Structures are given as C-alpha cells and as structure tokens.
Image 1 (cartoon, helix red, strand yellow):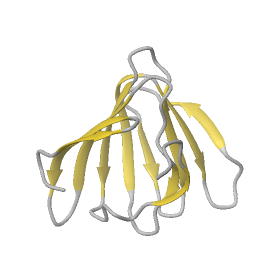
Image 2 (image 1 turned 90 degrees about the vertical axis):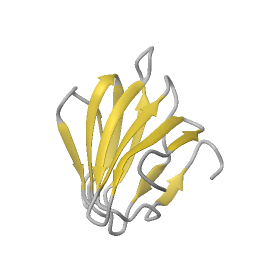
Image 3 (image 1 turned 60 degrees about the vertical axis):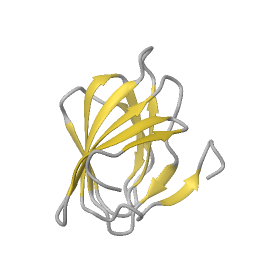
Length: 117
C-alpha cells in the first residue's frame, strides 16, 4: 500500500491519502447497506471522522457491552487496540470516512465478515 493507492473493496473503496513511517491517512467510502468486517486490531490505533453521508458505528470496548451509534459529521471516534468495531453505510448515498491511524496496515483480526474474507 502506498500514498495515492485506490483500492476497490466489496463494501465500497478506500484511498490512501498519506502513508509514511509514522501514520496513515485514508478515505473510506462505505456504500449504502454495506459494512466492513467486525474486527479489532492488536497494535493499530485509529481515529475515524465522518466527512459526509451517514455511517453507523458498532463498537465494544473491553469489558463493556456493544454500543451502536450514528456517527456525527466532523466528530472524532478513537479506536484503541483491542476495541471490536464495525461500520455500516446507512445513508442513501453511503458515507465517507477519514481514517487517521498508526502504520500497522495488516493488523486486522476479523471476527465476522459478510464477504467471506
């Protein structure tokens, strides 16, 4: 993965805006009624910001019950390592997320996936 990469995904697409030795910045587009895998990261930290559209975020912080919320545009949602999370596009036009994370791009533990990955 490199800066400028555009990657089609079964739920929409992602575009790498910046990737260096300290952080990664991406756009994630999640189409209506599509969702990412239910997942967590062992080391990777993410901050998710809704840019446009509508996204539902389900997350479970260690020792807490699952919380499902509609992301507010412009508000940061911090995903610490070990936090189980999943996003779903709920708007008629889907939703665009800005993701700022640490650089462990392959640190994904999938628990459930609609696309058999």
